[in-house]
Image (cartoon, rainbow, N blue to C red; front, side, top):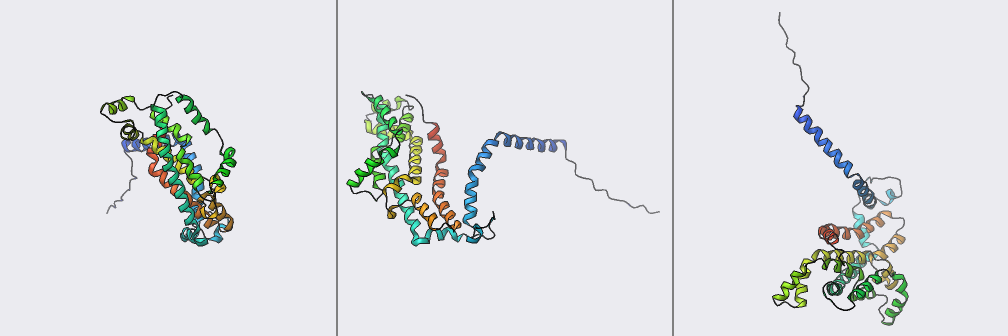
Length: 298
């Protein structure tokens, strides 16, 4: 009598150590999701419009008029078409926006940094009233002064251009002066005293000692000003002519001209916000550091 052997396949059994490690990783994952639930919900809320904008931008014109949420075919040429349509007017708006944002940021730094340094380091009569006056200008809405300012720039024959928006930055920005001054007062005075002992003048102390230590705050105010100028709609709408329009103003006319072609409208919108997002992600570390390190000392 011949016996037959039957091979019995055993199901893999995890060792207690591996099972415990897997449970611990799952517990850590669930704990991370629970502790970051609000941040995850906010991230989804902020990313959802961008994702919808991107998906619509790569659809065909017919697909955007349907209820579909995912493109059947990806049309990457929509971005090039958005840039070249209407004789490439978006490129001109992009150049105007860059000119406005870069010059306004540079002029703001040149004018605001010395004022903030003087308010933080110099002891003179009327220093506190001058600082209070700077703060009060932050509370004044721009709509209050727009009529007399427009009349003034019209007499200088500068209306229709971007100069009425750029030139005022040479006289300082109240918000930037406030942030820079609050940061500069947190820098110990011993550094400036040591530079003066070594024979460094006041300007040299500011440029060689204090400002390198204030780079996070300077980067923060520069990014604030750059983002403000890039997204400014009210100023260019009031002062500029069509040949000097920025992206914020031009995009509204682009949407009106292509109100049925939502793919082109979303592609143009995405191209407008993409440079700002890239700049922020590249400089977010120094930007956040500058904002968090800005002191509140008086």
